[in-house]
Length: 363
Ligand SMILES: NC(=O)c1ccc[n+]([C@@H]2O[C@H](COP(=O)([O-])OP(=O)(O)OC[C@H]3O[C@@H](n4cnc5c(N)ncnc54)[C@H](O)[C@@H]3O)[C@@H](O)[C@H]2O)c1
Image (cartoon, rainbow, N blue to C red; front, side):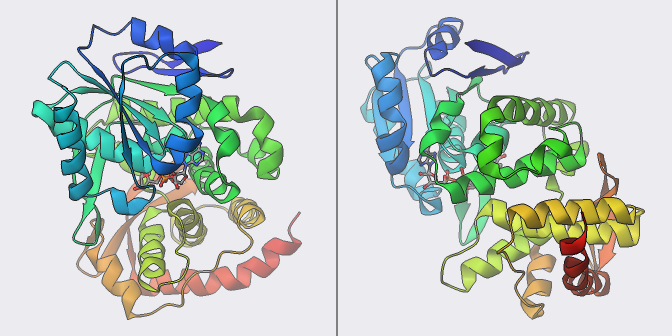
C-alpha cells in the first residue's frame, strides 16, 4: 500500500508491497514529455525487471552505467547527457534514478544541469540511498580524486521507496546503510536506539517503520536548512573521522571500507570525543560503542599517521590547528562547530581501544 511519509513540495512515498504505487506518484505530477530511467549494472539486473513487470515504464528510455563509485564522474555525466539528448529528452523530460546512492547522486546531478534543470524522481534501492542519499537534494560527482567535488542542490520532484528492493541487496551494503540509520537515532528523533540493537537480519521485518522514521527525521533537518548552512550539519556526526578513514582505506589498496562502514568507525571516535569534551555521560558512551561494535565487530581504524592530519586538514570542516566536529552532549542532542585539536583526536583514538574491552563486558 502506498503511503506518503513526507508531505510538501518534494514528497516521499513508501510502498511496502511493491512498486505499483509508483503509478499514483507519476499520475499526480504535471505531464512530462518523455520518461528516462538511470540504472547501474546491478540495479539493471535486480531492480529494473521489477518496474518493467509492473508496466509503469511504458515507452521509457533506459540508461545504464557501470556499478560502483567510479561511475560517479563527469565522464559518466557527459555520457548520460548525450544519451538523454539522443533519446529525445527536452526540458519537460522526467528522469527516474533507480539505484543506490551512486545512481541518485549522478542522476540528480545530471538532472540539475541538463537543459538548465529537468525533474527527477529518486527510487532508491539500497538502504543507504533510502535513508540518506535519495533525500534532501544534494547531488554530486567525484573529480580529481575528490569525493563530491562537483555538484548542485537539486531537489527530487518526489522520492519513491519500496523496501522490496532490499531483498537483493548484499548484506555488506545493508550493513553500510544501517550506519546512517544508527546515526539518525543518535542525533535526533530517528528510529529509537533500543530498536536497533538486534542483528540486522532480525531488524529486516520492520524495515518499513525504521526507514520511515529515518526519512522523516532527515527530511525535517533538510527542510530547516536546505543548503547546508548550519543546522543540517548535524548530519555530519561520524563523518569527519569517517572521511579520513574512508580516504585512507581507498588509498591503501585492497578492499576499501564502504561509506557506511567508515561512518560507523567515525561515530565510535566521535562518541568518545563527545564524552571527553562535550558532556556525553559515560553510560551513554558505552551504550553507543556497544551498539556499534555489535553491528561492526570486524572493523578497525587505520593506525594514526601524518596521513590522518593531512586528510583532516583537507576536510572542509577544519580551520588552522583545530577541526570542527559535530559532538553529542547527550543521545539526541548533537552540537555543530565543536572545536577539537589533533591531540584530543589522538587521545580519543587511544582511549577507544581501551574502552572496547569494557564495552565487550558491558550488558
Ligand atoms: N547525496 C547525499 O546526500 C548522499 C548521502 C549519503 C551517501 N551519498 C553517496 O551515495 C553513495 C553510496 O551509496 P550506496 O551505498 O547506495 O552505494 P551504491 O549506489 O554504489 O550501491 C552499492 C552497491 O549496491 C548495488 N545495489 C544497489 N541497490 C541494489 C539492489 N536493490 N540489489 C542489488 N544490488 C544493489 C549497487 O549496484 C552497488 O554495487 C556514495 O557515492 C555517497 O557519496 C550521497
